[in-house]
Length: 44
Image (cartoon, rainbow, N blue to C red):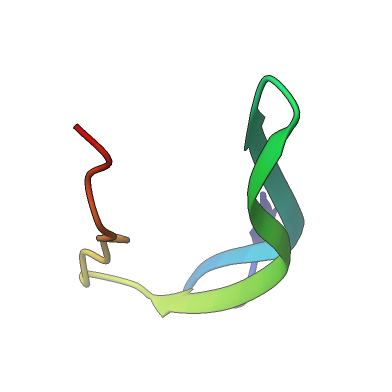
């Protein structure tokens, strides 16, 4: 995570559970004072 001026920048975020990739090269610019979340389906 980097500082994006007045917020945060996430560059090339990757996440996997075992062999299953759930995020691949995600980039986000989050302004100061904002809250972001990632939601997805549950496989239960």
